[in-house]
Each structure stands twice: as C-alpha cells, then as structure tokens.
Length: 347
Image 1 (cartoon, rainbow, N blue to C red):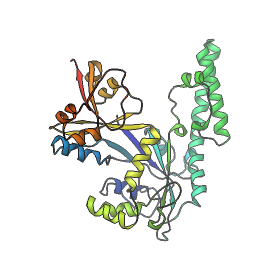
Image 2 (cartoon, rainbow, N blue to C red):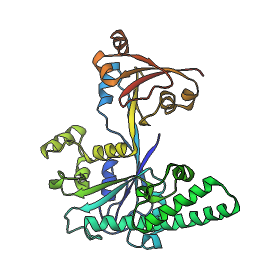
Image 3 (tube, rainbow, N blue to C red):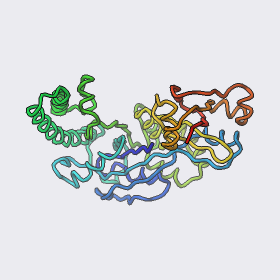
C-alpha cells in the first residue's frame, strides 16, 4: 500500500527543513519568509528497518528493498486560510490527499527565523480552527444534499446519513475535530469515508532545540535532522548516541505514522532479494499477498510463514524448515508484524 503523510503547520515552523532532511537532500526551498513552498513537494522515503539487513545475511542476498512512505511538504497555513487568506484553500486541498497529518509546531529558539505564531498551544489551535472551518463548509453542503434526498425518498440509510452529518456539524461548531465526534455504527456505515480534513489522523510533533529532545510528546529537531542528513548512517548513529538519543526524527515519525494508522510490515526473503511490504494490522493472508500483486490474492492457496527472528537464527529457509519453524497457513491466517512469507498461488 502507498502511505502518504502531509507535513502541516504555520509558516516558518521548519516544515521544509524537516522535509529536506527526510529526503537527505534539499528538494524543497527553505527560506526565512512565509510561503516558500507554493506547490507541495513530494518525496518517497525508505522506511528504516534493521531487520532487513539481518534477513539479507540469513538468505545470502545483497539486494534489500525497504517499504516506503510518501511525505508531502505542504505550505504554511495562516489564520483565515479557510476564507482564502494566504494561499488559502489551495493548501487545504493538498491536505485532503494524504492519509495522515504531521502537525509540526514550533518550539525552538532562533531569533533569525521570523516567528509567525504565538505559542505551541495557540499555534495548534490556529491550525485546527482553519481545518474545522473548512470542514464546516464541506459538511454544510453534504448535509443540505442529504436532507434533499430524505425529502425525495424515505430511505433509512439516508436518514442515518443526515443524523451523522448533523452530529458532525454540531461538533465542529463546538471546536471539535470530526474524528472526536461520537457516531452510531449505522451512522458510520451510511457516511463511509468522509472527505474531511479533521477525520485524518494527526501526529502532533514539536520542533524543538537539540537540548529539548527528551520530554513529553513526540519531539524532533528539524535542524538536527538536517545535520544528520549530511552524515553517513554510521556517523549519524554515533552523533545521536553522543546526544543521548536512541532514534532519529525520521524513525520517530515513521513509527508514529505506523502506530496511528494501524500499519505493520511483513517480508519476503530469498536469494534474489529481501523486501518489506506494508499492510494494515489484522490483514489476512490473501490480502497480504495482494500487496505484492493482485494475482497473488486472487489465486492464493497457502503461505509458508516464519517469524523473522527464527529465519535469521536458522540462517536460511532450509534450516528453518529442518527446525520445524516454518508453518503452512491458509486463507484465515492473520499476518503478524515481522512475518516472512512465501506465497503459493495458482495463476
């Protein structure tokens, strides 16, 4: 599956600096004034996973293909964006296209970078208010259309849709995100996937100084990430160790995105390559096979499954089979994070 995450925040909170660091090169312009990013910059970033190298050593291959996350650097929102201030609705439309939002909040001290916000708490309120105002307009249109449908035909499902939209509209008017509004199961089913900004999972992230990386919440330093992007992986790890930090900002953000969206990885491993695949937690074997190719899902028969730790400990598939660690699973098997699979299917 293709996972896309948008980086959102007020101008000059460090979005483009972080985006450039994530891509390990300066793709997006970074400057000391608002609206440096006019169109959203898009970059595909490999997901760091130390299990891949261990699996590659076990199956004796040098080809490693990690799974990836698409990051979208969205230009800074300002107060009044929902009414067209700044670059307004153009930016809001870019947010609609991502799976999750990294809400980046400035909490660093740098007098040379123009500060457009007030405080972390207030800045969060400004962004959420603009998203809520945009959603209020969308929900208003959807509700008017649903109410017309109710008058035209006595359809119970449309009635549930009206009820759900009314609840969401009321919640938004009270300053709630749509994701915080409680709905009944029939209302949820009638609404389906809503084209709203505030239903998207948010990963609240503080952009802090290097000496404030420890503390509550998800904290990163975009400046530090930029410095790390210039180093080799070994040098970057050593630098982080000196700072007493276990994970890079990229690792923190991807882990948070996976947890927020309920995702996990499984692997295929052989002499040709070792590769990671992203699926949702709770995915059954045929659908997991479909992540590789739709034909795998359609013709699924069985899957050979072994936990990645067992395969690396054994030193290969033959040894793992000899130890009785490889299981043959059918259509009802629910994949676990770190499973290594060989699929059997008919074409």
